[in-house]
Image (tube, rainbow, N blue to C red; front, side, top):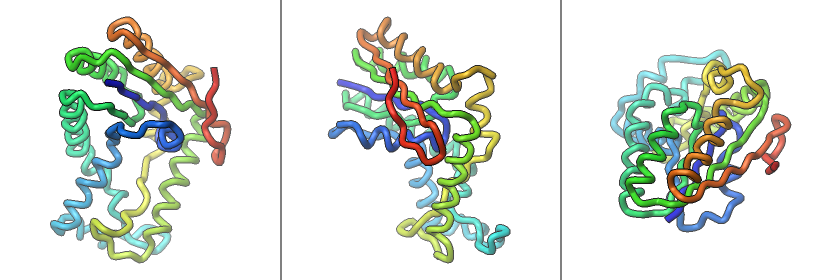
Length: 217
């Protein structure tokens, strides 16, 4: 049984790093996927029609993923439930997220220990705050352009996922060189090594808005 945890600010490139790894057979637990599921159900139930009344300065209406903050609590509960069920079943799991909230590391260690896991690999993607903000903004805008003019339902394009600059900045609120995501990731790997049996830490660096994450020692 093995678990991989990814950490990094929004838009850092965590998905690209995970896709480059040989993780066949692992279950991916991604809060963004959970948000899309909740949004899709809300669309099909007609609960998001109000968004069409609001136009942004580019002349297009608000797209479903731009309402992601409205379903944050529901999607978090859904992702938590899937993670807990997967660990209870002894599956190999990928836990994707920012890891900016330090207590989450305590929760992971507790859940893994109780489920009998002895191995945890942690991946952290690091980049400068300005680069993170630009990448997150660009990702949102590309998605928005792809959905322009569509009457969205759960089977169509949901648009870009908008992340406020403040949300990215909170990942750097410690004032240090490294983000809270990276600091918490390293601590999590160290705790796994001490408390589970094996923990590894791999750091990736993104040098610019268009750069691919590259591994560093």
